[in-house]
Length: 249
Image 1 (cartoon, one colour):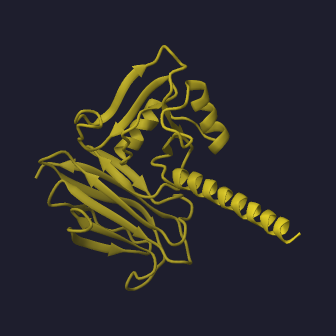
Image 2 (cartoon, rainbow, N blue to C red):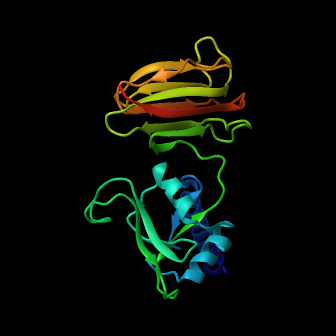
């Protein structure tokens, strides 16, 4: 029957669309990880008990509930939410990088509602899955270290990662590379690191680097410095590791 055939084809297309829609939804969430941590709600706001939150991380992503230190590390690297979620200690919390009265009443850091006695309360969840391919982020503090995705193994092709480092007000940043192995090219046109004094959009370029020769220590003129890594479609090497600390002018 013509109608029956086309109705079946229609149902198949609808099912295929639902599958790809769900795949896209999960992929978008998973790829949005910061330091391995991501916010999740199973597509319904504040609908997970503590046990359901744990199962959502495990069954949907083969992940675990994030603990407080993992959430704090992700916050330091730029993870920000305005919705609270369960973490492993049965605490309900969320990270705020920027002040917003409607999200934490202008507080920043880990906004917490404390450890909940009633585990049947319904919230979202923060999941954690180990992530050695995280790309870029916002790093704040007196000192720290970051690496290219996958370091000390090869970084992926076609990367464009940006790390924005911010020291306390009134301080400058001293940046020192401890390891570097990128595709060699005289003009650094293939795989390269660019360091900016300030934010990338408005900062002055301090240098573009590739190959295996370590750049000299670099110093900012303000409390912000940006590092960008770009790679092309071939020849992936070990990448880089860099440390920073704040100094007085």
